[in-house]
Amino acid sequence: MPLRTLLSEEQIRTRIAELGSQIARDYEDGDLVLIGILKGACYFLADLSRAIRREVFIDFMGISSYGRGKTSSGEVKVTKDLDVSVEGAHVLVVEDIIDSGITLNYLVSLLEQRKPKSLRVAALLDKPERRVRPVDVAYVGFRIPDEFVVGYGLDYAERYRNLRDVCILDPD
Ligand code: PRP
Image 1 (cartoon, rainbow, N blue to C red):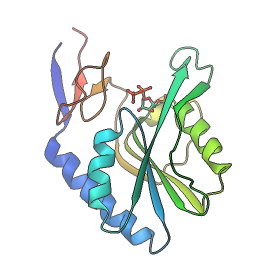
Image 2 (spheres, protein in one colour):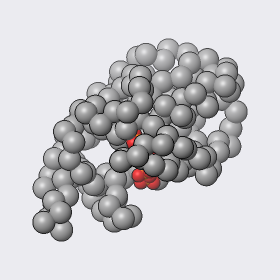
Image 3 (cartoon, helix red, strand yellow):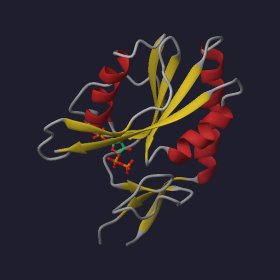
């Protein structure tokens, strides 16, 4: 299927460096735990964590959503939970993309119950047009139009995750 570059490797690298500096400035002290949401966020987490020039801890969560898209039932299930406690720590949830907002809306409520010192979200990509549930996103890499995108962690049927650019996948 034809691919068109939406965001180049270079654009992504530059923006992540900016986000990393901003995050390092915003969190002067305290433990900072970055939580990557599997699987799409793995590349963003790897690059963002190295762009934040302060000590960080990393962990992962697995989430599966049902009814996203057409029906948006909002049902979300945790398939892999954290290994570490986040009580009293600054938590930054790291996502590759926010679409309907269902995943993050659920996840933020879940993590709030664990009494972190603060809780924010960083997303490389945001498709605000698609929002069904509200999500407060502190750090956004790029706001993008409602196109099907792959690469830099994002997949189509598990393919294309390792592309270095974020590309638009044209169905024809
Ligand atoms: C994607 C993305 C988010 C979620 C966003 O994950 O990584 O977790 O969808 O969509 P939403 O805002 O509509 O909830 P996906 O379920 O495709 O899993 P993956 O990261 O393993 O590809």
